[in-house]
Image (cartoon, rainbow, N blue to C red; front, side, top):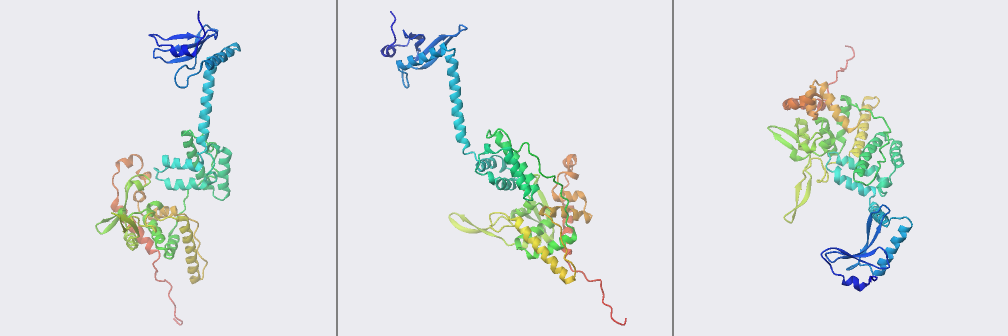
Length: 445
């Protein structure tokens, strides 16, 4: 006669060549499965309405974490009650486990998201994507500054309404172009956040630019350049040299600011500035034959020294940067220096006007990048060919775009040298006093 299971019977059950089950008389469906390996587990067996046999594992019957016999009987009773109410206990077990896994995942995600605040995610974004970009410095400055109001907010808490409010606030402060730039940069950043599964929707995706931007065509002509060049004498040496080199070479702001002594090469009796690919916008080496006026400026620049430790001994060595005050970083603070220069220009203009008894000359608002355009325009007025100007500016579009750029390998180096010399002579001549063409007439003549 079969009897109910006992703890002793379960403990004494030995493995066989095939798996077998020990039923628990009085508790329908409850079994102990004994595997060929000796492992034992409590199971509940039942038949679905479609005739399918189902085995529901309740838990181990031996070893660490094993269920006691009363616990197994209770679990089997729960399964029978579920069946009596029309619930499939095996399907319910799967659903319960899925719900529990989802709950745990949600809790873990919530715990991680507590640390996913905007400033920390920005740091990850910089390391993952931005730091390798040529525009990294400017992009990091833009995002870090303009997204400051959100610094401690969770990245998944930023809404479309927040995005619109931020962009509108920048526009209302009188900076519509900056608002557009911020919108574009933030849109890309939040797109990266989607790729990293930090958010599901981009708050900037359905926003629009707040202003229509026009291509700038501001050019400083000879009168403007003469006054600007004269005013540079009232600037600190580093900014005087910076602006003079910008005007004389026509190169980009950051290229001039980051000029390194190692980039200045002696070529016979003249100097060449060789920009390496990693410092140019198009990632191509660029050679600028420096005119004598630019070479003279470089010779006048003092070498800034920095402290370094060599073999445990602290020594001074020359900085690698041409334009630097710290010795370890290129010159910076362009906006502040530009403000000082604008004031110097106004002062010089007033002084000249007082001498002539005329109204002061006013220079229309300009930006640093306008100097590059002004150099190109000025050279063309001096009859320098467009191809030479484009080579000087290191452009790969225009005359040298497409198939022409592939087959045109003439760097026009000698033509560029002549053009820069011509331009430098022109700039210097703007402030050379010329004899007056007014002659005094003696009385009685």
